[in-house]
Image (cartoon, rainbow, N blue to C red):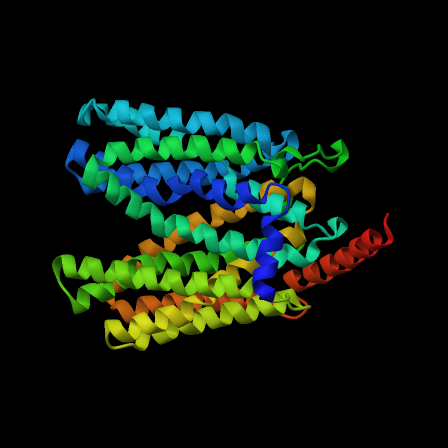
Length: 425
């Protein structure tokens, strides 16, 4: 009941329903676009390699421009940026669809449209996580709900990547992949505007001019580069999983059975993560957050070593559920560390750097995993993922490391803020 009361308390925060529900609608495109775009371009050219390239252009453009958009949101406010991108992104998707009607001869225009669509995707993830930090700041008196808020955000965000491909499949059954992209455009438009107009976003106030981000921004903050290294370790592991799990399935089944098995295994991994995330949201964060983060990452890394040793899909499925229960808690602490390290004037940009690093490292992990699977086997791909997360665990949990120092400094600030709030100042 205590856990339920915490989530109910979260629901009643100003603008929380939009942050919890509308933001998921607005971000459905993150789980839908890659598959829908692949199918649209493949139908246009008859080549999966070209379709994959178009998807890469979309992803790289989004990752590259994301920190710039995040800095803009810190300067002029998230509402203006969200409203502009809420309209721009759907227009870019429609342009992409119209360009695809021109056939293979129109491929350069399609690539340009992919780049514009990727670059214009609304920075909802950064804006929402920043809003949760603002709503649960020490001065607000709601700091005790921060862990619950970020755990809920992390867990619900995973729903995007579970539901998104299923929604695309539904569009294909009743229409086609092009209709799925139109669905993405509508969901992005409606969900983003709903978030932008929520009380949590409209309560934003400009930061003092002397606190504006310049130069490298959050990259020069103590602990932030090391935190990005941890993000990369997890991202590599997730990218590896997207290749290794289907490859494992292909070793134990054939044809559509292998594809179905891979989907089931990845789904149960997500279920395990969601379950762990919801439970973790009811727990009180450890006093030494960096140490707890390091321990959770070590657990995730150890789970990948276990995956490498398993003989059949049933065993792997059980291990994925158990190991997955550590993922959302680790991601929750990752998001909490961003909120602790970055000042309010850099928060949107800091979160967009996390998104950029996660996307880039996952892509690199998937590419390397393909080479490892082809030359050494599936087991060694899981070992590679374990090593990547292991490096992240050591970086996060090292006593006296930059993340630990940043964590200590943030605890002092939080305690001071809570004391002032309690005193009514």
